[in-house]
Image (cartoon, rainbow, N blue to C red; front, side, top):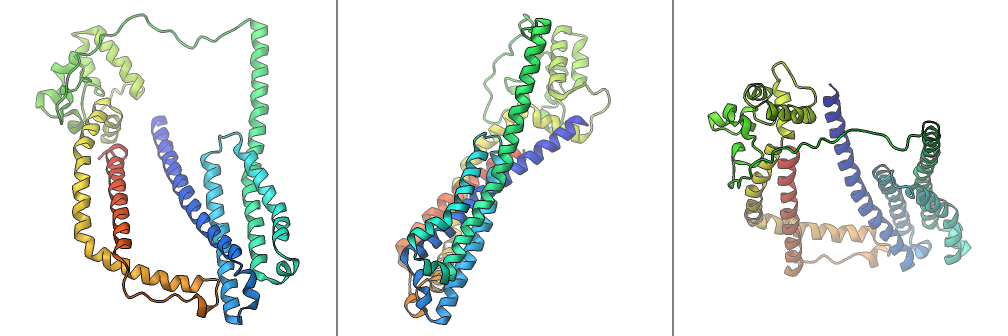
Length: 381
């Protein structure tokens, strides 16, 4: 039961690690893009001049800035929360977050007053929204930073008390070290090295235990141990048979089995227990490595064939995307609508499509290799 809980806990930890990494990347990209859009509007002066636009254009600019500020805070929450969860063990992270958050909250009004006139800060709704959004982001940074600082202080106090208690006990009892175990001087017999083939069976690897090989059902049936879920790394029955022949090696086998899987099971193993032992077995891990070496070279020709088949569809979708971007940029432009409208292009230069196609091909090949690696080593297909 303890091992099952540990396995579930490890899966939850791996899932949380993957989700926080994904959130960190997506949040960082979204935050940088939105912040760049806001900085562009301020640096170009169009946000400041929006008060002189027509009512329709002014409302459009204000709505765009308001939406950008909301997206800035949302992406900021995702970015900071994922960073805090992922790197909470870093001692300086909490202090950095607290200092940066405090500086943004109290320093933003002062910075804007140094670069923009007071009349613009009072009358321009867009600039006011930007100032408030940055101050809110400062609070977003400060809260997890303060929590991490409190955690670090508590850990430091607890560690100091623990060190003082250990020092006190050593002075009282004269103990300078703690004996945690003994190392035996007996040297174990090294397995005979084998040079496995391209897709070796379990008994053809250097991990096979020779002293139980004659009793192994996998070797007798000429089937790999991961197929019949019984082998020299996990089956107690093999150990019991070998115990009557070679007691010393059987004892070593039992000790290794207890180290790997806990207490030796006297009853029949369930299918789930057999699968779990296979996943932890060095022979099966070696088998998965061989499988990856065979499958990974097929990714490149498969990706090339898929891109060749999808080429007309990708070319058509690229033209549609360019036309959509033209309309979108006309809408989010800080310029008045007549000046900000972008002319519709009848065709896109081929060089841009080919750059996009090469980038997409590299991306597909890279993530296909990651997918194969994840399926073989994580899912262990």
